[in-house]
Image 1: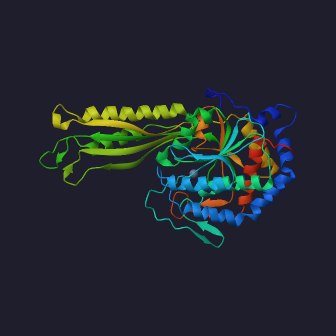
Image 2: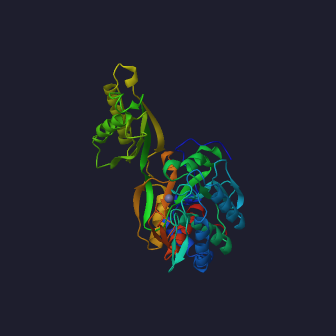
Image 3: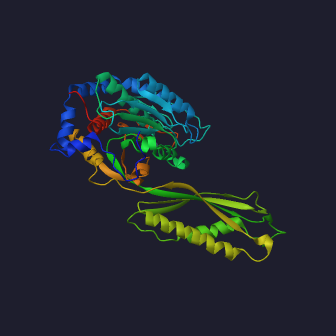
Length: 424
Ligand SMILES: [Zn+2]
């Protein structure tokens, strides 16, 4: 559909063109909220709360470790088909797509996405249960709540017979967590088919209704491996030791001052190396995480890491060949930092929806799938799927569906405000 759009070019939405007229975002949201079919959609959320919980239990029980989401993407594609979405398919990396067509064939998509991967490695025991109205299981909230919200929006739009003007694209994407490094949404925005046709992306991630993530937190992650000749701790004493080299690098690097504003952090999260207490190791590895809202600060930390390595390696490498050390730095994560402009239609629309629903929400900075479109100058936010949750990224994770319908109403109104409603 059309040529690939240059990064930064806005894709115009019905909402954008309407708001340039006299109608304010607030008036438009109020008008949509009064529609009989919208009330029917709201009622659908309440009437189907039990089925939504059942679907949440089902999807949580399907393991979806990073790089191992295929069983879950198959499950989601089957649900999309049951909901009569069009063009249901999976792409080559496992992202799942389904479309609710709009009445304007030329309008760009309003996209809703939920990541389908979890942080839990393959083999993690998955026990999902319902107890006293709450749901328990690893990933039950992050992000089974988001996945269920996709199904709820598609189900309610269909049951209420709502006609959207712009087409609505539903996406279950892979690779959000950890070393997945946003690979699912990154891949989507690398395809002209999508990057040129998605006007706004609404990322549904976890529970809650009290935040609007409109600012991307950037992060870069590195793996540093130091290698040497190794040897016996007694007979080869004096050979350069990769673990000692790493320790010196860590000491030097972590002394790098970081500003409080913009908040900038570094962490050494994993260190590995060596084989036995009486061997000089042949290699040692560390994983480094750096985060900031500022690309300049991330650049500065990257230079500091290289400086620490470049300082330690020659210091520990003498001319004797067996003492030669080498270091290799591999980038294992790169999440760009960028913000949604305050004057964007998407931000105006979510604020108008929150005012309509008397929902108090504040904007926050975080690292989510929205980072990718934001870094390309495109409109995106991440919001919760309603209800409440806790224990994210632990096997004790829980989700409380009380209040889920506020989250679903919020998502539905936002979607319709952006896509437009036809025939009312
Ligand atoms: Zn998540």
